[in-house]
Length: 608
Image 1 (cartoon, rainbow, N blue to C red):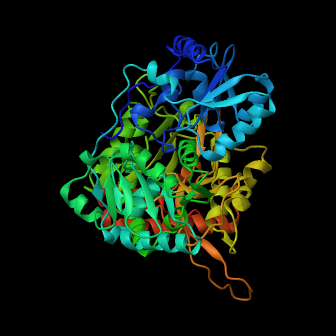
Image 2 (tube, rainbow, N blue to C red):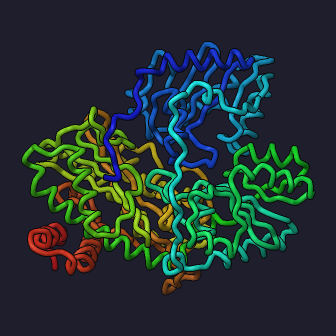
Image 3 (cartoon, rainbow, N blue to C red):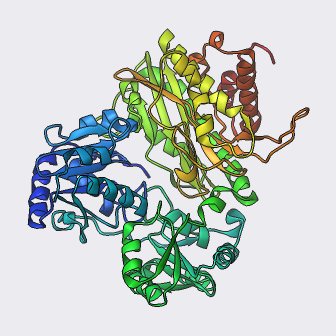
């Protein structure tokens, strides 16, 4: 199994570890400390040795920050983790604060006093984050103090070792563009901008740029590494040599000089001695880089990582790979859904069992490299926990009269998938059908949208929420995130959310996943991945428009759809989508599964 079901996190050690941490801060003459849930690469998914926030607080979510002062501590989370944090964190030790209601900077301004010293780990905060923090801290008359090493280094004595897994090359048939050509494009940009070099700090950018994949991060094929690309000459790639086999070394040596990670500091100081003009992304690079380069005398130009947009704009090979991956994944998911329908009414299934079965169906393709994240299989009230992860202590039976929300994905060498389906177990209630249909209406609004150049995800996010808003409902997460090509299942910069993001461009892949969550009862989410298509002229129009191509292939649960709440166009879209699902998948299915797929893709409209 790629997924394990060990019980992770919980409040058992929160108070004790918080007390030890405060004692360490006192010895360092610090009034407080900020500890985010990140690693030195600013990853969302981190290796076990970087789970510092989990160790200190017991919170296992993928985003959060602990603010620890002498007499007060808070864990800042977003709306995805409201219910989870309440069960995992000792409420006597930490206040749980939703950043949508109170920002970290505002909380600090209200509590810091003149002369206070707030510590932070420069590896764990981006340049932009530190800039904002410093302004708030200084507004209170306090000081923001970099602390290296992190105080936790002295307390977390049974810390796991850093991963050392072999690097693999991503073949050109999947990557689409040679690493040498990608590097040459970046060097052209540097020359045009009069810069000497750029430092690449994001692991997905490094993997994409050098056409390499690794196993250093759970469920995400990243290699812990650092890269420097000069305007002329070979790039430098800093990576543990134990991960580099002969074939990989031969391929990489054509485009890069390989060095150990311990040599990075010296390389940065050499740039300073050369008075080099260095491009650094303030949104992705840790403050540590800026500190080292400024101390060494380099000239810093703050600009976006040059890999981000070309990585997001999938090329023809990556798009073809994604379509193939979704076809393969659709077969596995439909086999799973057919099996679930045949067995769920028994009352013998549970969350761990269905998660295990789904992975088995994906493994049967003989192409599964990993899951793309821990499967969310929330039965009944657990479905209302947005990022719920089934574990032995929380494992629920799947009972008639409930909903099962299952959000899962796969890593194939040709593409990354992410799909959510909400399934009725037995007869759904009228409220379940109503809420599901409202969520589906929002999903369809995004899927059917056409939009002009310059449209941002924040422009279209309200369209997914509109049916819910009309009913006085909403959800506390984004509508869509970017997805990589055998890379991160959450990839920037593209998104569909309330927050501002860059314009959508052809080749970008995103999720389309509105939802609704009734605490203590059930959760509903419907997710497909979608591809931004090339602009096309519309008859009678004067601007070419882009659209979304739906990549995911799996039916919706017709038992949860109330046609009376749908327009004629919405019903037609569902019927067309189901016809496509059947046409694309039926040749790979047989027997009971094929009969099941034929039944569940029958038209809502009653036509053929």
